[in-house]
Figure 1 (cartoon, rainbow, N blue to C red):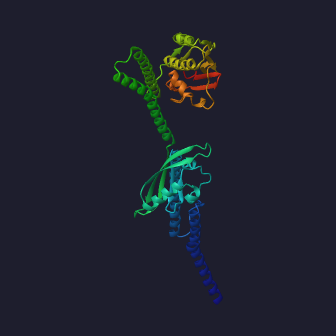
Figure 2: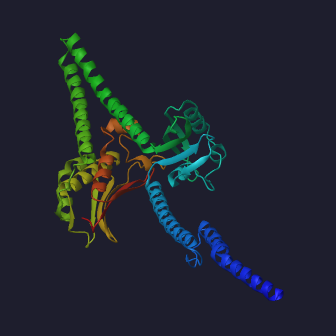
Figure 3: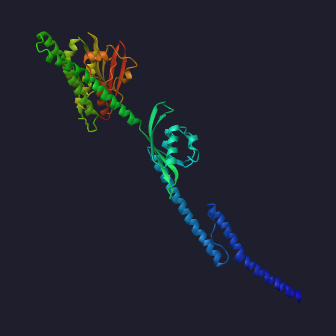
Length: 424
């Protein structure tokens, strides 16, 4: 009987142990496995846990936590994607560093500005970008907590050209106003610097061009005032000089006004059908007298497919006037001028060529700049303003075209205006 009793007791204890295992121990091991999978970002096969009500509630809570974590991950990914899109679209460079001056964020523009190849978040800034001014400004911002500005000069590794960059550094602070890092924005001001220089050069050139005739006029006026009994011969000579320089002033003012109008954003073209044979005939008739003064021969060539075209006839007339003026001015006596119009694929090419003194290779790339003269003394002697080819260039660009120049010293110059037919 005792063995039977002991067997019964063992059976009861085993049953109780099994029930305890199933209700309390096994479920919590399953829950532990669920926790590891959720923590690792893995989706468990099921959140249903065999066992007591409490274990089942824990499993359902873990499922809710997992779903919430997925939603947060999606939101973070969306925000990260949006942040990267914003940083990628920024035209300015952006850099964020912590208080140890380690990089925590940067965009592509910043990497391109400093020609960074293997820049990494978390790396020390000084090891990534070796620029003393940048490091000094950021260090000062972190030390004082005050905004700082400076200007950097960088060298493009591909073109070896200088780039001017304006940087602004602002300290980042926590809830107790302690500096935790700095945000630095880099704005490329190279184009602004170039435009400022162009404007400065333009004002200087205009002042220089106006000063000479004005000084001459003022000097002769003072001479006439101081010597009212000037002889008729001397007076006639003085008046001729004054007239010549007053005309030069008038031409300069006219060209300046024309150039300003062409560069204005409100400039429009009066596009209409232009018959090139008629246009050339009218222009050459106007220039007949000037061409005859130097006994210049004019050869006109028009290809069969060069007319008619759609363009602003008044502006094209201005182009050809300026090109003819240069050709006549720099041609020798008994020389030859060629006026041509021909198609080149989808473009129409208008050109004026001469066999005059020509332009050197060093000067040729700059002849379309305002006030640039290859031979300054000769140009002033011949009465040029230095703006004619700049006007030609702007008119061509307004038509969606471009200008080309070809020259050889002693053998003449050819200036071409290339206009796209499709857009005229």
